[in-house]
Length: 219
Image (cartoon, rainbow, N blue to C red; front, side, top):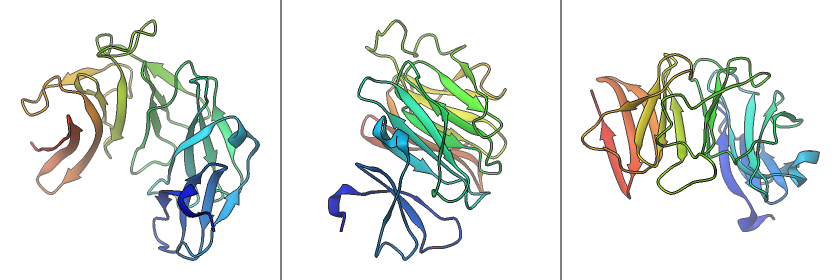
């Protein structure tokens, strides 16, 4: 009945009949494979437009959702009961949230990017640290966006985090305290819209969407 209003967002890790979607009114859930959808009501849905819902691989009822306001501020929400109830974990950010990433083996290890910094929580979003150390040349500063911005994030099972920026890929091996550029002749300093880092049979691997090209980066 909601038609084109809904956009698929996340899927249950073990039950194919359970999924979550984003609509104009907030987060929706289906338990019957999409035949019907129920709005998961929450007051802050009226303040922020949801942009994503993600489900940790290691905890079936935990969900995280991101939202951005018309004024350009971002917020992050968490549910521990499959989306029935929600809590606002962080809001009032200077910029909107561009992406969110979860450590595959730890549902409490959460990362998200804004155009100006990377935020990391090791306790499910109760507390956060933010960093742009090493990202000075690509992070938005003083609202100067040209050639700058942090667009996407992906975390590997060993805790390494990779982010896609307007000028290539950067990574952190110390929980996000510092960042270094990932040197690749395939990517260079090209804008990276999305990336996924994962462990393949042949070693650490990335799929990168850059300048309308899909790039496979292997060891």
